[in-house]
Image 1 (cartoon, rainbow, N blue to C red):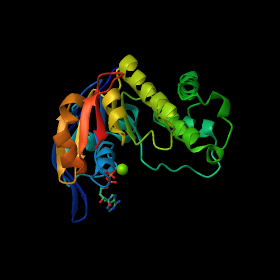
Image 2: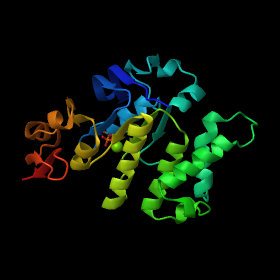
Image 3: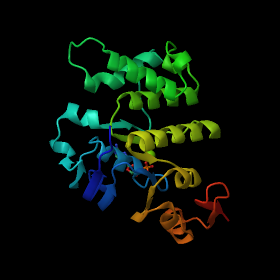
Image 4: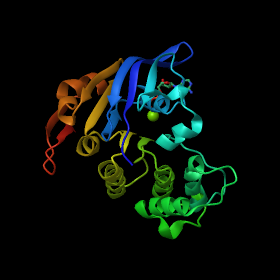
Length: 259
Ligand SMILES: Nc1ncnc2c1ncn2[C@@H]1O[C@H](COP(=O)(O)OP(=O)(O)O)[C@@H](O)[C@H]1O
Ligand SMILES: [Mg+2]
């Protein structure tokens, strides 16, 4: 599996009269890990959902591998792109195993038996998130962190060259946050998957991403490498935050420290 390029062109998004994103052109390059950052309500989730065809643009387009996602057959799109929404919902009582099996739907025929490829993909996904010994437990009995990892396993089992994840580290303690981001980066580095996440932690974003997209209350503030994007001026514009930016002593990536 190799990655695939995701691109927006002059994208305008909103709900009725309310415009949330205006005229935004971005490239999420093949095999790159990108994080979208910005204050609450600036449109991060709206943008991510539009990338997955869950919001219809008011103007502009989204293409995946050069093909307009609105012109793509649903099953074909689901084989190329998986999304973990910000607040996903599952049927009551569903077990971890059943949730993760749903990730195989795009790959299966209507009446096709469960294949070895399906079983392997689910086993690998559960292994990757460390839930192999929790598969028969109902999702709603898990801790917040375990539940979050079960959702991530669902996305991994879908085995797509493009992964979109909205705040995948919320509810996780720091070591699990790093574990999840490492896992996504592994998917990215080893399988070449194009990964787009929304995160709140600027410093983890800078550490784990090749590319950042920083949105502010008035739209795009900056896009580029963490070093280009995480500057004191940009943080002021996006978050109205006065911060000091210095190299992270562990990785050398830029690190923001609020004043
Ligand atoms: N389904 C919806 N209907 C109407 N307005 C919405 C809807 N979803 C989000 N919004 C509004 O769009 C703006 C951007 O929301 P969102 O994309 O969720 O921001 P973020 O993820 O950056 O916090 C907010 O003002 C929010 O209230
Ligand atoms: Mg959001």
